[in-house]
Image 1: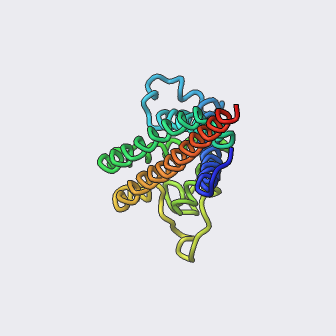
Image 2: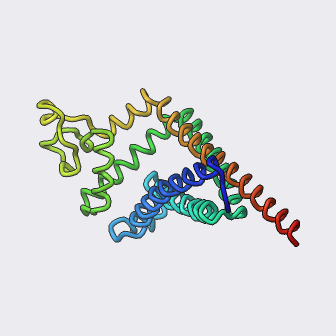
Image 3: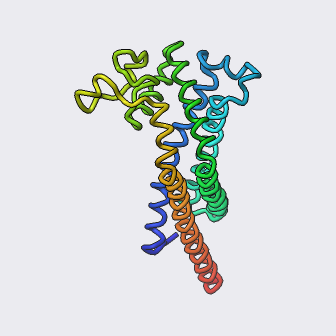
Length: 238
């Protein structure tokens, strides 16, 4: 079905959006499933007393979020590539829910930043302890990502003493060879001094979802208009 310039731009924007969403969704789901069913971490989920721990909750959120993102991608790609109105309508509904959830979660995270900070520090500490216990390669990659993103080094921040030194980033200067920021402190600092930035990330992600939603609506209107033109043409011919 022929689309005008705006429709084509929206179609390609949705394709790129879904590609990014798919990569992130697979990463979340893969990490969550690994942490849930790995021999090194499975026992945590079998202990009833730990069912409400930050680690268990975080893994559950990763699996759920990754699954939802992939479901959204399926509807989005199918609807945009094949110009199917029904799939795009489901996609737009899911985007609306996700955008609203992003904004709500951002506001709640900002208003309850002390509790969120404590939960994330607890999650990090659990990952750190698991890595020291069994050296799981996936947990090592996760710690490596966290350490490089926050530019911190384990729970001590002292490379000479740090047991997870292999996952620490390269020191920026001479003094960082002696001591680097420790990750629990950096995480706490992020939520204390940069809480508005954290909320902004959530709101910004919500805005990105709304942009995709607008493109979906434009594409839906153009597909509907094209279908009407085809119907009118065949009605005239026959």
